[in-house]
Image (tube, rainbow, N blue to C red):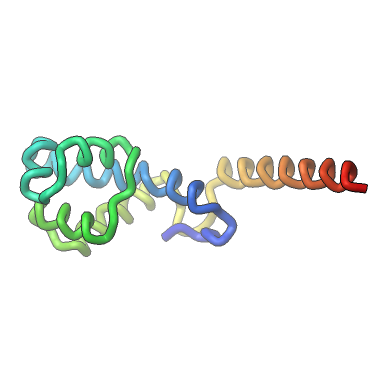
Length: 124
């Protein structure tokens, strides 16, 4: 799965994982020819919540994942497997941090170091 997660904040990790989950959920729903409303009804969640998950705006809880799997007629393992396929499909490498991500992390680290240096200078 995703490596080096210890270097990411919770918000960064969420932003990294939401798009592949959104894509997996949308694909499974469409393969079953279900509307968002129908999936929501079968899974016991609101249609708007299904929409927000498919747009990558919300992260489902474990109980919601189980309900979605049931609503889709798949096992929880199959739902997670579809998510993993999206992760491995180029969005996030399971072998290493993507080059663009490494550059972004370096920029964040550089900005953080610079801010710390400025604060130390002011505190002295």
